[in-house]
Length: 193
Image: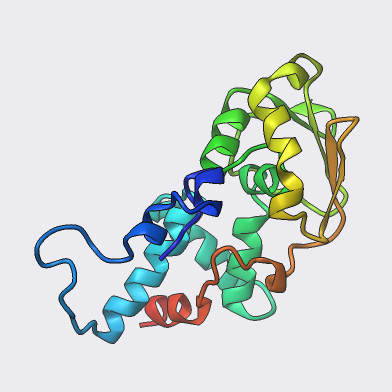
């Protein structure tokens, strides 16, 4: 399944899954029956890998989502989506979440005019994410901002491309977390055992 981890390459025909959608090797095309637990575990691993979160962090996000009001699975995805590195990716400053994480770690971004270099920083409604003045000439960021229209901008963020800043207008919406589509109810079933 496509996880869109390679940035722009996943949107072209050069994507590995477009060319060959089965596992490599002699037995790659064989059929295997997967148990319910295997399906749930695979879904959890997909979400973890997509957002670049370690197991301990993921468990704490799930525990926090379980304590909050609302549907646990959707709340979990909302917490993961409102991380600084994920929001930087959604705003179009980077072509992949991995690149966004790297840019945040290197200190290129300001949150409410304060330098933040922690990718797991939780953004709230009304927070302003801006690129530092020294970092506005970074070639990768400018290339990513040029390609943001192809990927699309979610409705819960607002981007001012000329000023190199964006604002979190509302909480992330489940309907706009489509890349890739997650079955969060499987994760809830896995952790509720």
